[in-house]
Amino acid sequence: MSNESNPAKLANTVASPAASPMASAMNHPGHRLRHLPISFFAIVMGLAGLAIALQRAGEILGLSPLPGVAAAWLAGLVFAILFVLYGTKLLRHPGDVAKELKHPIKLSFFPTISIGLILLGIAFHDLNANLAAGVLIVGVPLQLGFTLFVLSRWISHSHFEIHHSNPSWFIPVVGNILVPIAILPHGLVELSWFFFSIGLVFWLVLLAIFFNRIIFHPPLPEKLAPTLFILIAPPAVGFIAWVKLSGGLDGSGRILYYTAAFTVLLLLALFQKFRGLRFFLSWWAYSFPSAAFTIASLLMFKLTAMAFFEMLSWVMLGALVLLIAGLTLRTLTAIRRGEICVED
Image (cartoon, rainbow, N blue to C red; front, side, top):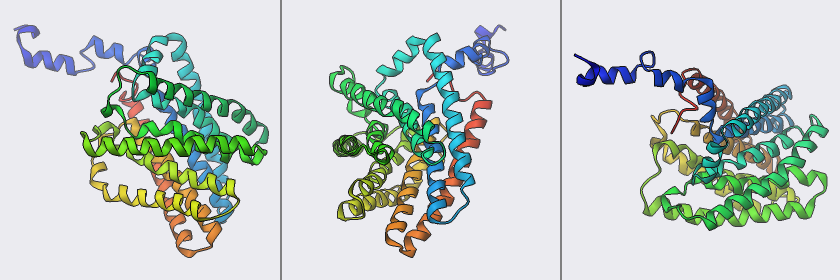
């Protein structure tokens, strides 16, 4: 009996990579490059966030500076590799990049490129001043460009629906709030306030849109569930930026920090929602927000000298290191198995 007349044999043929010419073609490096997702740059955000957290822990908790240095260079190396790979994709498959730019969800991940550069500028500030300045000269204008591009797309679109909105839409906003942390040490005060204002106002606008979507519409699909952690980032990063801009801890700074802390508690209360999720690249959404809250807690301890914030900083730092290590291992395993860079 032929495969065409035997559904079981046909299913086995399709399911078996060894028996399927199509599966073989899909595992070809050229095909996988075509489906390299822009969201890969979120890995750089997580690694750079870890590097900054380790550096701040070195200053505030007395840890060795070596882990922070190593993490910064690792983040820079990963960014360079991804930049070359995605640049090659742009040259060889411009149509696929154009599709991502038109996608209501993938569009929001393009600013991860500029955010990665800004974070690298922060991570290398004390390690290599010229390198830090160089990446900021590129990253800050690029962040503004991506913000204008994404918001213009949202305003002028003809196909976005309420169910397309999700926490990844906060990514362009987080990038703007990060800018003051990176450029204020260079004396750019008014430019710092410009970016902070954009980030803060549009964070609140998007927060209202998102809660309308999550309460009154169907829940997020499994693949996007980890992006709920992105909700931590705007108030956590906002707290750090506000302290730098205002010169100390005040009521506004406390509101931002405790908003981030409450968001952490809320996500812990939703633990069952994240338990047992299949691995997707979106798991890296756990990383940078966790790093941001860790850094914010370290800063809170530095400003208040309260034992509670010291203990919280140690707990968050330990959890962050384990989280990044686990995500790295799981991502490398998925790459080896060919589970990433496949057609959605």
